[in-house]
Length: 350
Image (cartoon, rainbow, N blue to C red; front, side, top):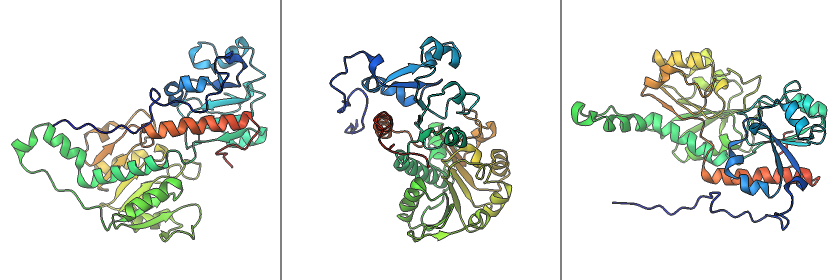
């Protein structure tokens, strides 16, 4: 039986840009300049045609020249005021980028995390920074719950078991575990963490959390100490930003507190977890499993994880859906248009 799903997502081919200006046939060089570094944000290629109606993108990623040489060749060293970046590219620091762009006043990133941008230096230079805000929050939350269900119910492992023909040869597959009534420790109750909590509360899970400060408006139990949170949790769901304070926050001591029946879900940044310790705990059976969308040295994944049936892996795609990419295009366009119109950015980093 063939099943056809009604397509409701927004794709570049089918989506018309309702804000395309009347002068879209004018010289693109008259449009506001925006610098793209190497590599450009993935969303740029997906919506290049739509973006081109609004901005004159300087495509340094197409050139073999260094950034200073490229800017000189474009006669743009002193008039680039905005750049559009991604965490997949270079770190946005004074020496690498900012010193070459004396007129820069706005950085727009396609990511939620801004750990690759030197915010202190941007603040000193009065450069505004805007991120993706909560564009990805719904899809990230869905992915986190999906990873958790997969780990507990062994869905991916069972799928491989059937595909390999093991069912008819070896018989019944090992049983998984119920999600309902488990204690879920959420690390970072922001936009994404709040959505994860709401979804898992629907499974009759008990929600615990740690965050920079207690949130009086939520009914969940607050833990100021990550070790105490881990000790009282069956699952740790990591969705906090990567900062100097959160780097390797999930370390040996936290994993020991979580215990042998514990599960780790990470949709944040790989470096929030001490990856070497996590691998060791999984190999030695000191925790029960993990669902990982992010890794310390992407796209390199520790080889030891590849053979473990209690680990579900995803290539940093928790945020990525057709719908999210359409929303992100509108969001990025809105931030850039606000900057060039001297209006408040949609999602400034404070």
